Image 1 (tube, rainbow, N blue to C red):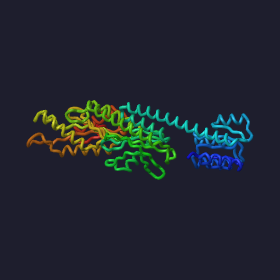
Image 2 (cartoon, helix red, strand yellow):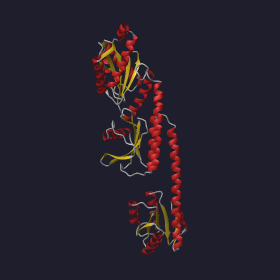
Image 3 (cartoon, rainbow, N blue to C red):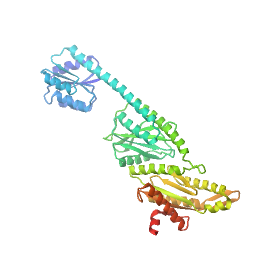
Image 4 (tube, one colour):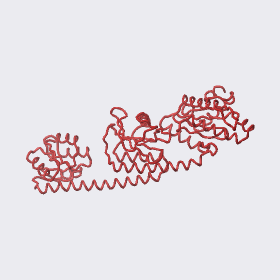
Length: 450
């Protein structure tokens, strides 16, 4: 039911106006002063205010101004017994729907109110159509995008507009079930990353999924509205929204929100398929790992992400020791089998999100996401030990033990340059080989010994 607030300090007119509008089926509240009216406007949602121009505490024009500040869509009719052209023009210019001068006939009063409410309904319907057209156009833009990160940025912008929220971030859960921050609006990257870390703790992301919007309290007084974007792809996007005052509810048109979610999920699915097709060009046929062409693409992307969100990352270079001896003794087909097994060992020793690349020949490169010096050293040592303990099967009744030398460097601790990061990891690896092989070396060790 539509709600109307009558602001009138004259009890006679207050009662008449209330009775007339109640007869027409409106829910009517009354206030006998301006200050009482302002409290009621703050506490409740009204579609129309009918206010007298002259009140004992504040003027009807003040009511008009304050009401419009609280809700720009609210309709206001100003009534006065001392009308003049100047005050009428002022009221209309400042957003009043109409200006009535007492005495007013009952029919005229009801007609003006009815007309105001009908115009409001038409404007709302028109705005609703405009919003739907805008949302459809936004979804078309999203559907035409083939970059996953760009899709999630566009969806975040659209979700903020659609819900009236002021802050939010988008993240993605990949096939490895890891949750990664993609974009943030209305908050710093550091704040978004902190919330994303809290979000990781709220679910068992390796096993749980959700497909409907949900509100989640990440800490007392701080709620997130989570919008899942998932179709049939293992990739799942998530948009998390938050108000400036960190509380809900915010404005929600669930029909529009669901439409945005569905279209965005389809776009993510298509982008994922495109990414898979594109990746085939960057796959090493022998090992199934990424090839050298992909190294620069992946490294540039991950360094930009690390820089944006203040994260660490590391690069490991790995060289299989004495593989030439295997090739010379048993032939290159056997050597190729060893390279495939080494690739399998490396993949099983890192997370799904880390990027393993066959650099060329018997060399491999590993990009460790969100990993600093200490973590990189642990991973590199784990890989070294696993390779050293592995029995590499070369054929029937034929196996061999191998070792590997690994070198690593870290962003931003060692360098912020992409080229230098690769060179440092490579130099650290060669330092290890020259020091006796089967080693893990950080670039600092190479520099100290020079």
